[in-house]
Every structure is written in C-alpha cells, then in structure tokens.
Amino acid sequence: MVLTSGKDYSPAAPSLLMLAPQFPLTYLATFGALHLILLNRIYTVIKINLAALIISPFLNAPLIMLGQHWGPGWAGGLAAFASICTEGANAAISFYILGAAAVDRRFWAIMGKTAAICALVTGLHVLLPSWQAWRIPLEVALYLLLAVLLNALPVGDIRRMAMEAVNSRRGKKAT
Image (tube, rainbow, N blue to C red; front, side, top):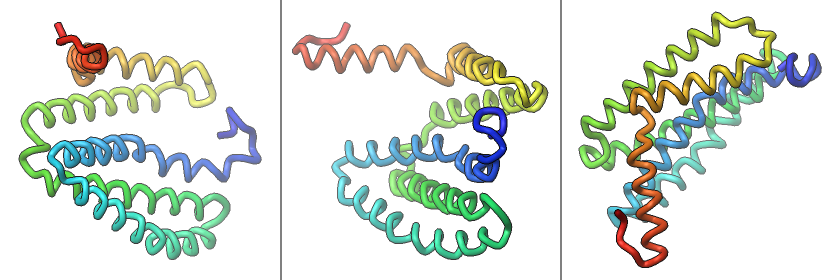
C-alpha cells in the first residue's frame, strides 16, 4: 500500500490481504451457480444467495466491532474476512448440492495445477524485493505462462466455447 498510495493508506493493507482469496471463491461460487442453473435448479441458487445475504450482516457486525479494538484497518480486514467466509460457504453449498455432477477428475487436476502454480508464484513473490513495482507484471506473466503450459487454463476449451457461442449467434455450427 505504501508503494502505490502512500503511508496514509497503509491501514487498508489488512483488508486487501484478507480479500485476496475472494476472487477464486467468487469464481467457484459463480461456476456452481451456473451449473445449478443449467440443471434447472435456479430456485436453489436463489435460496443459497438469499442465505448468504442474511448471514453476511450477522458475521460482519461482531467481526467489525472486534476489529475496531485491534487498531486502524482491522475492522475493514475482518469485514473482508466475513465476506470471504460468506463467499466460501456459498461455493461450498453449491458444490455440495451438485455432488458428483460438479467435481470430477478433470476438475481436481485443474485445481491441483492451479494450487501448484499459486504456490510457485507466491514463492517468487516472497523472494522478490517488495518495494519494486515491476514485480507485479512479472508475477502475472509467470502465472499466465504456467497456467497455459500446464493446461490449468484450458485455452483450447475456452477458444472452442467462444467459437460455439459466436457461431450459435450467427446460426452456424462450430467447426
């Protein structure tokens, strides 16, 4: 935070650290919701999301009050933690309901590759000097390169699905 925004914004660092896992959890929750929708379980998705909306304030209120006593930035950090818990529960419930329909061998292979790539890039992140802004594009490039090379990001499948979507709009069959 100090590098990009100055010392005045350093209390926001705990929130940003806590929010880091939010993106993959949101991806998983979205993936689960879309799968349920494809199975004509839209009302299940609505129930899961309503439960998350109801639970969120009950998690946030005590954690924010606790964080206020820990110092600047911690109320926001614990609010971020509550958000992660809510999103994680949302994803977990979706996958639990989907059962074997959601999680197969290919899914676990991609998750394992993704975890290994995250560990490698995190290791690089720790080794690089923290004050250098150039490390961020390097880390992103390394992550994408490894994801493509190890097929954790199935580019061929993504390209095929995109072509099918484009061709279906045009009324053609994908090649």
